[in-house]
Length: 271
Image 1 (tube, one colour):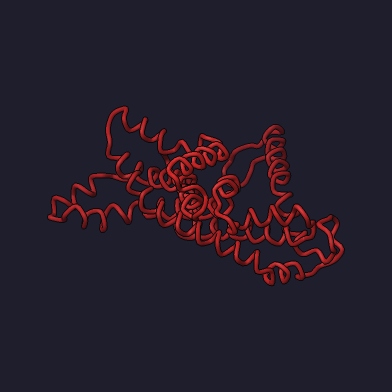
Image 2 (cartoon, rainbow, N blue to C red):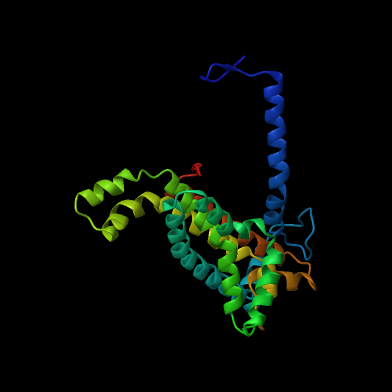
């Protein structure tokens, strides 16, 4: 039997592999679907099967000032992290891409190290550092710096991927026609790497919004991000409000994926 117009015959093992991959995807996606379903449960407890359909827990969520404050605080931290990393991540990627020799690989490993080091270790290291310099956790600077450090590699790697596929002869042609360095960057380089910048910034925002360990250790007194507020809530309550909060985070993630798809496309860039 032949599959479609490709003319490639599918064997038993091809079909078995397809079924296996499909089963794995269903297994991985089922918790996400279950959480979203539980957020519409009319029952009093976070339990399955559903007792009925209701929006009461979203109403409870939006009427809770602590959750609203935590959401706004998380959005503010994520936005600042995204803007800062959008600038320094892009500049760092351009700098590394222009280097030659073994120094480029060593610097790249250093800049991507927050992805290699467990988040809790990064949080502990930053906590000790802030206390050593007398900053402590009395201000919001510590948690903001922690989020910037943790999300920096996402912008750096995505912009680096765009630069890897960028033909530098376009810059040379621009300079030969009399354009200065700034105009060449603004009119040639920036439009070429814009997909990488957009993708990296969206990833940075989503990751920053959901960071837990760094927020737990570096938060200032009286300020909770949404994941921390959810954690505190679940210590004493087990109703579907928690599922409603999780559904909002999942929704934001899907919005980011949709924006990436509509702006730059969900394609793999070589790095």
